[in-house]
Length: 259
Image (tube, rainbow, N blue to C red; front, side, top):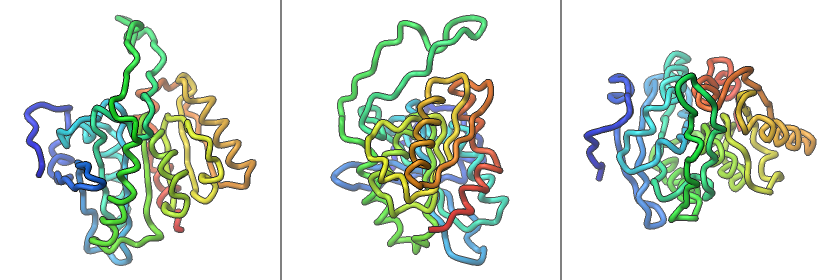
């Protein structure tokens, strides 16, 4: 079952037509997701690429996550590089978050007209404290079995709340992913050991809250002989840092990783 959507974010017609809407049920929970089949006739094995959206993409419309520029950037890179892959964009419901914790709000800043986000924004409370990424592992396993995915080429990417979820997903599943890209989201867990076997590329704007924490986490991973890279984005605040992180150079690094 796929729910129709009458309103939604601005999504290019190309992305809307390329990413078909689906819904699966795992752990008695519905997982809405969009799927793109990329270069199916190319030679070689098939990769699986998963992108986790930010807090603004939550819901059950199976559309809002496609409004993030990262979706188009990742798809365009894979398509232009001739990589054979399935790209999935699952959606987290409004009652939950990817890592089970309240999404962090960007630090308010003056944009010339008003403070963004509002200074008096209320702190969110989650009805569902279970990390929604806990439903993704069985979903991924089922998807791999159905589509003949190369288990050595599974990649996870996330921005903001999706970055926090990506940290948790790789920490909880240290042997699953060939590589991970994390944009502007902090790791709020304590299991650093779980992060050591996955190559990680982490970015953050120098003018946003996650910058110092992301840099420190990468340094701690490398001090324990992990494989992590931190790339600061000079002058960028949160929204721009999320939107500008997924460059061809960064994606080339990620998709060169093989487990």
